[in-house]
Image (cartoon, rainbow, N blue to C red; front, side):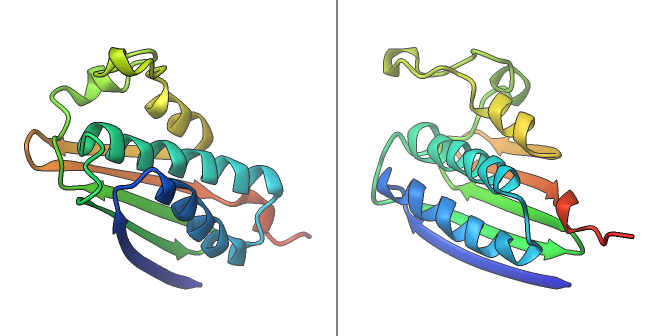
Amino acid sequence: MKNFVQMQFAAKSENESFARVVVASFASQLNPTIDEIADIKTAVSEAVTNSIIHGYDEDEEKKVYLSCKIENNTIEICIEDKGNGIEDVEMARQPLYTSKPELERSGMGFTVMETFMDEVLVSSKQGEGTKVVMRKTIKSNKKQD
């Protein structure tokens, strides 16, 4: 099975929950478990929040781009912004690292994404934005013998 969806939305914190629901609804065609859906929703939440808070400094006039595709039993989710970009992606992926300590953020966003998804790829260029691609194979969808 192949399927895809693309959308964009304002970089408002209220839209983070909207993005979670869209991705969860799209993933439901793979018949995931509740735990698998929760993992996907949590990872999407973290990626969208990073775009809003770090990519755009909460500028609600900016747009977050979301795309999902399903192939076989794997969902691929892409969250992209055209914002600030990340100076050092490897440093940003370290647990507890945050570029905004004044916001009392935990610095665990990428760690959470990596924990719940099978693969997380991050590409970023300062002044041009960040793209996070996450993949998860839905194991519960495999045919029973």
